[in-house]
Length: 167
Image: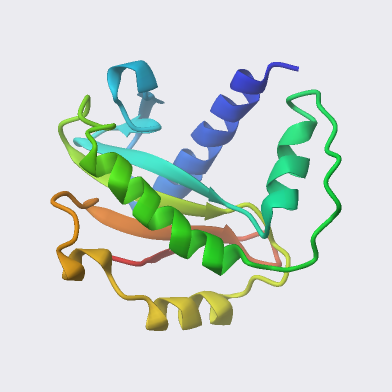
């Protein structure tokens, strides 16, 4: 199975799901080219999306991608849910990449979309609690560059896609 093809289909689906809720006037244009320092998804209206896949733990991430990569995972399953901790660590890593010019091939408004790859015990109260405790990174002025917006996206227990803005 072609891992790149599956990853691309996955990215397109997430971006299209997001923009169908975010703004129906915006359209997916194409996948970005990392060789040209472009973000993951290029959209109409001068927008683009950089994605973060948020997993419950490292075992889950490896297990999910082992099938398309045609590999086996030998890790012992983890039962600790640390998805919100993982999210909190992933955002500054993406901000650092933005600071380093990794997305300089795009000259528009760049949205960071944090997509939860699980439905396990994830409900709106958990997300709202996280948002209420979230401290926006742009307030600390640590970086010179910031994303235009940062959003969280997940599927609730009924399969409905939900989005919430972090900053």
